[in-house]
Length: 531
Ligand code: TRP
Ligand code: SF4
Image (cartoon, rainbow, N blue to C red; front, side, top):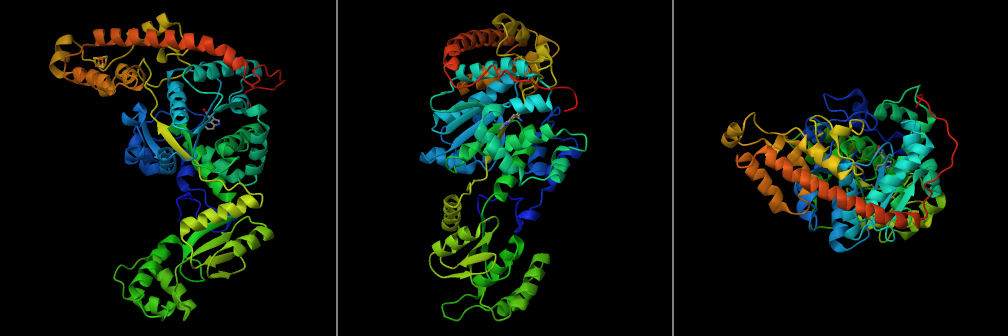
């Protein structure tokens, strides 16, 4: 399997690509972890997301990231899907892109700032950067009016600009006015089925068609950076958006003209069977010119003590193939190619090749080269050639009052528009991980790991200064730091941050007005609670 192929899109026939089971479990709320893009997603145990949903721990790619962001270093960005190609592109100065989207349902707050910072960080490292306003989603899934959406959209964009997004190098757009996104959404919709929306999102007969349209629109957002040219693209989001990522990766694979796999004989074998074929081939291959025959490989596998169902299936296929030589090759399977594209591919395959009805085998090409060729031919013949989009996931911030940080509970979060004095007051009033008395705190130390105030330092207030963040942590758990003074310091830093941010926002008003983005949509609309 190649790096580009999502693990759950292994079916050779595009019509039977399986929706992975974990995606379907989402709606059912597997155990106590539920990832619901429109629900309340509190995650009790982030480790479960690795086992249950196949999100990978970020630690494992961290060493591959050049000068990682403090959110990466501090474990706030805890997980990823397929981030390696993006890390490599950043390292090697190759093309990459970053995109995320915001539903303009309220004020942007310090939780959104994480994502703004992630976009900007990738942009500063050379990635094409995109920030979008998910207005169609806000209208259809949340029932916001166009006037409300316009106001909030302006606030999100101002904050993104104020934090350092470069609109000359990057692109800001709203879903509703981006014609290319709409066209792409329509196209991608032909590779998504209602039954899988039911499985992944819990949609049913009562779900509005516009809400479904907002899902294919998000798929289009995610792939939009690749319209000019396919490139590694990262989507920074909270883990609640992971169902969208899984679907986007599946849908991207389904649009491909060809699927490139490795094979050993004319018959099809799945990855488990292929491992046995590879082992038999490696064991039996010698320097002579005599080919390894399928039936000999079957004999060899019969004697293999590590028997499993894959081995038995492989043996059966090898027996049926009899005297056919067993030879490693790459196989291009036709998924969506036109006849001309298939002919062109066969023509372009270098070295020895064999053409079948639905596939062509190449005996002298490596898988990477084959993958590249498949993409080139696809692009030449009107296809998109998408690479599977990658994602990174950040932890949700704890609310200042404990529990979830929620846009609908003002005291639980700090809005980027809050008066700096209110920001100060909210921090001063925050719940802490402190002990009941100062004496106990000195004796036992505070619980920084369970303290919303410590989170403020780690996520935001300490900025890039790891030493400062570590100092707060160690002083806290060592009992040298008491909550009163600690909160005072955090509150002052928060006030300063808000003052500065809001000055920057004011300066960005003119910049925003100079951009080609319509914030007075003047649209008629129908909202209600039938979304
Ligand atoms: N669904 C996202 C949210 O609820 C918003 C969104 C729309 C988005 N399109 C996107 C996020 C593309 C990431 C990438 O916040
Ligand atoms: Fe939290 Fe600071 Fe108190 Fe430690 S000292 S528990 S970090 S408020």
